Image (cartoon, rainbow, N blue to C red; front, side, top):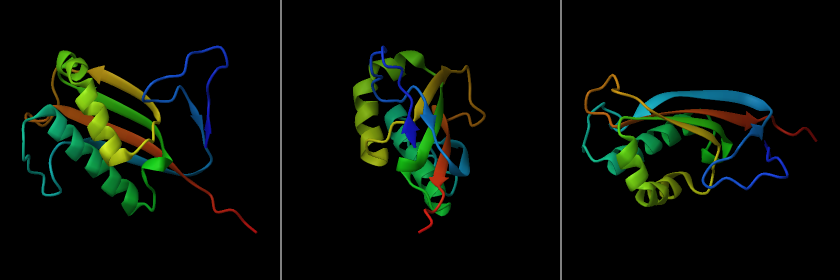
Length: 134
């Protein structure tokens, strides 16, 4: 992967402006804050986000990839004010689950998600590099 950063731009915090990559593409459908049995264990935004991130990591691992292979992430949230107010907590839980892997990201506030209890839905694109031939 090559991170794309225009030379005269300030560096982004917690995301990349762009990434170029080559390999097997993995598309992770929108993950929400329920467990593998599709049951919510909490209505807390941060806890749901942590679960959604763990769900993403599980799908990536099923494809032989990890957080370091993410190139694009889109967040759908239902409350922008809560998102902004809890950014510090959000950053901590993100780094706990995903490490210091920051793909190109977008975040969009939506009025509702399909699952009524969901507070966040996150989708990811990852690229698993082609094997290097000796």
